[in-house]
Amino acid sequence: MTTDHDLDHDLDHDATYFLELQTKTGWGRALAKFAEWCALPPGTTAIDVGSGPGLLAKLLAENGVQAWGVDVDAGMLAQRLHPAMLHADTLHLPFAAGALDCALASNVLYLMEQPQPALNEMARVANRVALLNPSELMTMTAATTLADAAGLTGLARETLLNYAGRAERLARWDEADYARMFAAAGLALERTALSMGPGLVRMALGVRLNR
Ligand SMILES: C[S@@+](CC[C@H](N)C(=O)[O-])C[C@H]1O[C@@H](n2cnc3c(N)ncnc32)[C@H](O)[C@@H]1O
Image (cartoon, rainbow, N blue to C red; front, side, top):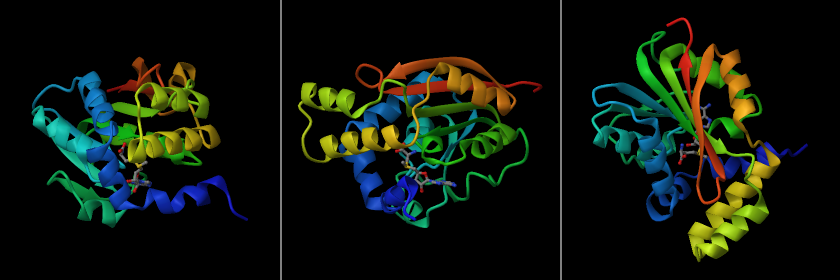
């Protein structure tokens, strides 16, 4: 039987696609906004889980954060944009409990059939967890309207519409969804915000209870 997750599988492992996405489309700006929104102080430590080629880790490092990209796909690490990249699975992060100030993941958990174990593992290794995923406002219609308004063509348009299609099939999370998932991981939802045009993505920052 073929599932929606299977249909997306090849794309998930296309390192060239994600390198172009992070360096040749507006997605790079979305990751820069996410890094800015997280406001991690210089000198703190962070991992970007499911980093792809590592643009977010690179942006964090440019702001003085000691940042590592972490990805399960060796092809992503081969096309790295950041020197500190680790080959590891989200479910088994190679860090001791509470070793890091922050664990981030952009567009990783919504792709998973069971995101909670991944979130739990991020909360194990870090005092804060920052997530970015499609918001409750993400639809094909909303993405098409944004693409038209922004005059997007080619790769930029294709990747945005593909993103919306996957979100419609897989998951779109609102504030209550994050609060519930964070609570199950022993995190309190500290703040959340919409980004990208009318708010097609939602960022959420949680802090570990019982630190
Ligand atoms: C949609 S891409 C997002 C890339 C990047 N975070 C971004 O926003 O541009 C998902 C990434 O998560 C990685 N990934 C998927 N499952 C993973 C797992 N279990 N552990 C670590 N990385 C994983 C994939 O290899 C891919 O690089």
